[in-house]
Length: 314
Picture 1 (cartoon, rainbow, N blue to C red):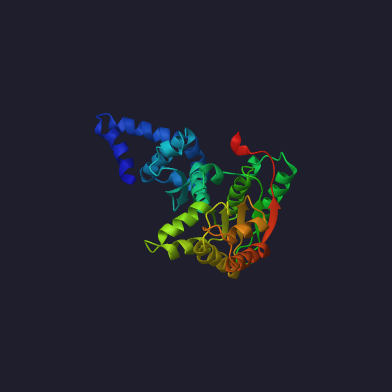
Picture 2 (cartoon, helix red, strand yellow; picture 1 turned 90 degrees about the vertical axis):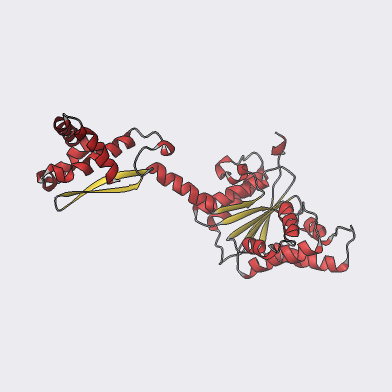
């Protein structure tokens, strides 16, 4: 950093009129309003030989002028992109410090926020959802939005495992509300994962061949808040139901980690779906296992019905 400042100053000194140019530069630095204010409040610096401090004051002036004419974080010309200089005094000498500017802080916060929301097969529009953007054009949507916001504000993963079960017709905004929940949770530094169930179960089947089933299961099992989107739209099989969904829900129940759902089915319809098989037959053992899973779902969620117009058809 100091090398670049010396290089700038050396450009003046290489010229035959370097002395006059150096004095001009020094006057410009000392006349800079922020430097004047600093020197006025630190007379011990003002009384020290200018040569001891001019380099740092020159760097401060140059970088602060860049900030005053800020072209945006991506085009920031400062030595440390996104960092703003501040000066202090110690024993008559100027000390220069850098701290993240407002834009840098905002960008870092956005990255941190985004890192708390994981997703599998979910559109970006959903990941950017907020409660402010939810249309309150139907009584059930208003009720559902209130329930979603209440959960997002009060969720306590590890202490309380009660989640929400959003059900209703296709395209009424169930998934969008889940995205709003995920963003509100991120504001509270609570991590979440939104999983589109049909594609996730399909991936789990494919993972048997490469031995990555357990790793993928663990990622989903241990997230603070898990959102299973469009459960019931998948092709069910005993292995998916018992060794994937059942294992996930059992672990989360034991660890008191809330799970949220969206579905076109209500509780009874989802139970019937989980009891079905790819053969189309319903056997007694499947009914029993489906009932066991649904007991966990019912016990650990509050059902929320959402109705309204199909927003995907707009």
